[in-house]
Each structure stands twice: as C-alpha cells, then as structure tokens.
Image (cartoon, rainbow, N blue to C red; front, side, top):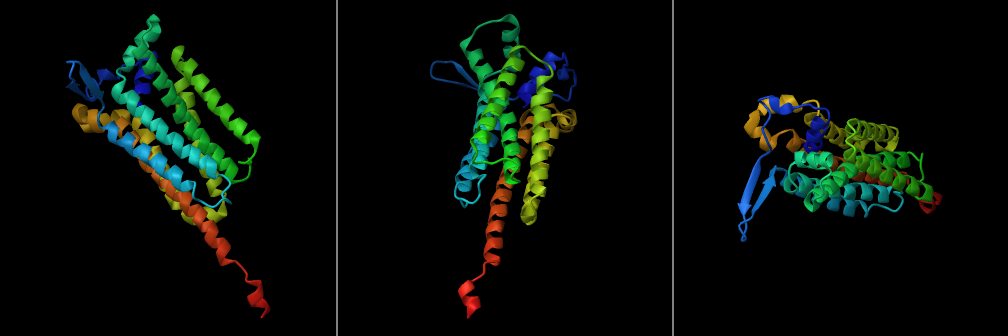
Length: 292
C-alpha cells in the first residue's frame, strides 16, 4: 500500500519526507552473497505478514471447499480467499525485494527500458489489480448470498471475469500514464464501496445474525488498517517516530490488520453456514415418529 502512496505523492508533487516524523526511507537489510553482490530486503517486517496471509488464503480456501454443496456461493468465497493469499504474496515480493518506487517513476518519465524495472512495474500492476479485485469478489459474494446474482450462472462468471479484466486494464493505464486519480477511485473508492455493500448484504440475511460479530470485528480491523495507511499515516509516524515507523509503521499495520480481518471473515463464513445447517436439523420433522 505504501508503495502506491509513494508513487501517488510523487504524481501530485506532495513530499511527505519534509515531515521529520517520517522515516527518510524504509528499513533495509542487506546481505553479501557468494559473488559479492548485495541482496537487500526493504521493509523486512512485512515478510511475516505476507507469509501469514498466504497461509490464511490457502487454509481458508481449502476449508471453505469442505462446506456443504447447498452453499452455492462456496466457489466464490474460495476464489476470494485464494486471491487474497496471492495478492499479499505478490505485495511482499514487490515491497521487500523489487526496490524503490521512485525508480519506477523515473523509468516511466524517461521511457527507459530495464528488465528489472519491468518486473517491478508488472508486480505493481498485479498487486494493485488483485487488491481491488479481492474487494470486487466480496461484492459478488454478497450479491450471490442474497440471490441477486446466481453464482452458478455463466453470466455471473463472465461478469466477474470482465470486472477483473477491466480493473487490471485501468490499473495498467493509470500507472503507465500516471493518472493521479486512479489511486483514489480504484484503491479507496472501489474497496470501500464493495466492502460496505458486502456488509449490507450479510445484514440482510436474517439466518446469519448470530455469526455477525465475527464479520463486524473483521470489518473493523480492515477499516482501521486502511485508515492507518491513508488518513492516519502522519499521526502514526509522528507517534512512533522515524525509527519505529520503519518497522511497525502504517504499512506494517495495514498488512497485519488485513490478515486479521480476513481470518475473522473466514470465521464468519464458516459459522454462518454451520448455523444454517443447525437450523435445518432443528426443524427436521420425523414423519414416521409423528404417525405413531
């Protein structure tokens, strides 16, 4: 997330480094390999959060696949959690191993060609696109849960794939042509709209109400993380100081809280569907027993 904030700041000519509370650069650990070349890891504290996200994505997706077949939205939730794991893994590679976002901007402005910077650009588009598409996936999950869309319909699948494709195209154009508004529309606007819509759809399902606390807690963690890396970034950096904000600053909190948020949403999905099963069993009528 902070990678795109650095890019965004440069596009709108905003320099946060003038504030002494901000770290001059992310923490960097460098090691010498056998050939004498340096291997540098930027923001190393993000790596555990990305590994955790990958485990959450795989574990949750696998366990959702075991839910009853009557849960028609099952494949959509599987896809959503899997994409989350892939997104955070890609984000870890981008933030920690692929270098400085300022180099990417210089490349775009000077039209230079470099294989490493091309890889950096590719991962930037992948991470941005997957982040928006995870939110869109939740949007589709919600609409299918309330039967507004049919999860087993081809038209729903085509609409979902079309949305994914459109998002990747817009992010590609936005980064290449340096559209200053793309971040606010696709990162903040779409994510907030889709997640809020998903919450409303779940509130509309009466049978899920006892499972809602897990969803609300997950939503709160996600909202706090998003605020930490956007509106609350300056406050957190000022509170922690330039040293600690290199390690456990806004970006770290956003990654960590995203993991916690997805874990609670998984708990909600499992509890909600187990609850439906209990309700069905509770009101099951044994016809033969009643005839006696």
